Image 1 (cartoon, rainbow, N blue to C red):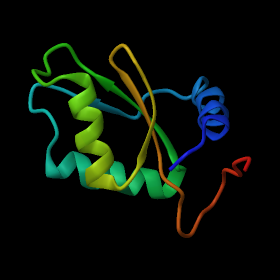
Image 2 (image 1 turned 180 degrees about the vertical axis):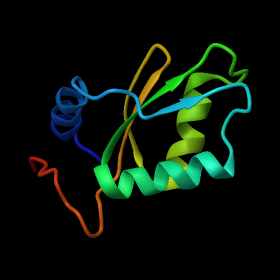
Image 3 (image 1 turned 90 degrees about the vertical axis):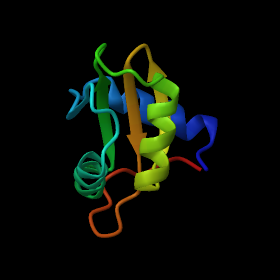
Image 4 (image 1 turned 120 degrees about the vertical axis):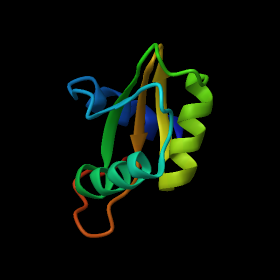
Length: 97
């Protein structure tokens, strides 16, 4: 579980990120979860866009992705989601306590 201070730090880091994934009309799939999990292992912080063609609610998509990848939802703004998961091998981000 992330503290508010940690989420604030991650939000500021996510400002400069470009979205790596898009969730479209197919919604959340196993392939998306696997690719996102690999990306989280490499980058730790990932931004996603939810397209308007996605029929699911943005908050539900965020919950599905976070539970499927064991990641934390840092932020949801409009149709953009930021996820964080600490890398087991390539720790890059040092969070405040």
